[in-house]
Amino acid sequence: MEDHATRLKRLRMRSWHRGIKEMDLILGGFADDEMNSLSPAELDQHEIMMSENDHDLYQWVSGQSETPPEIADALSKIRVYFLKLKQI
Picture (tube, rainbow, N blue to C red):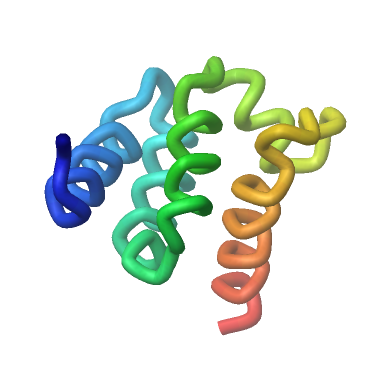
C-alpha cells in the first residue's frame, strides 16, 4: 500500500505531466500549493478527476461545460484556488 507522502508525490507528477499545457499549469499549480491540505477522501476524488480527459477537464474547470457530480467537489476546489490567485 502506498503511503501518504508517496501518493502526494505521484499525484503532483501526474498533475504537471498531463496532455495539454493549460492543464499542466492549472493542475500542477494547484497540486504544488494546495494538495497537502486535502483530506484522504478529497485526494480520492481528486485522483478520480485526474483520470478524465484533459479537454473535458478544461471545459469543466473553465465553466464552459457542466461538471459531472462525481468530481464536482474536486473541480470546485481548483476553481476557488484560481479565483484567489486572480485577486492577488
